[in-house]
Image 1 (cartoon, rainbow, N blue to C red):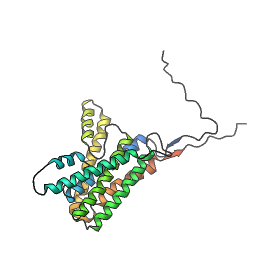
Image 2: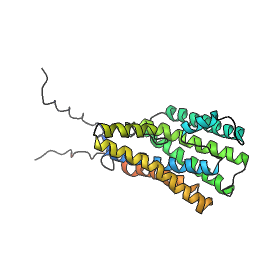
Image 3: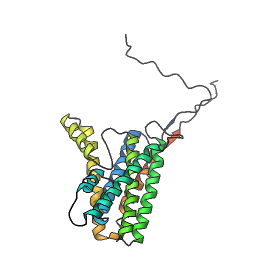
Image 4: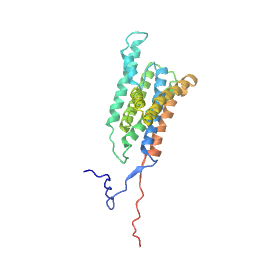
Length: 255
């Protein structure tokens, strides 16, 4: 027969290190904030790629698979090469992202491997922006392929990182699944879940809108928009999700 009250956990052994806890409060809330920033960055990167790198996607592989299969039309061979390259490099990024080991001191809700992946993604965004500026926002055929490869690798690593965070029903590089989960939550009247997923869907569109405006108004700095959104993710991890040691209890005895 089950008891209603669970037994309290045993006290830590003498001399054992205190448990690590997140530095910024509720880790679930800040994990979600990180995913929102990543989604903004993915939307921005896709907008730059679609508008300035030959009408391809670097985060949304569903769209690229369709583009690869569209035979015919003007310059369709070039479109197939670019879209196919994005799919291949994105897949390599995802594979590498799942192979990164989770070693070191982390916390229960935020794997240390994800932090490493975010810093690698950020470095790739810096490489993308550098190449974008060196091309004067008008890359040639070879530069376009290189920029697509760099951006797709960053998005693949990001997709793996978001999956390893494991927030149910939320993705950052495409939102078809998130939109489906949103509508499921609405149908089930789970308002809180629906709101969280709606923000993710809107974040992808907002990131794309910001980047598209910069592409038209100040194209040289369009490559900086995905970087600015993405950099907020590891900053949030460092400031809010970094584990910290609990204070040791006093060792003296009451007299």
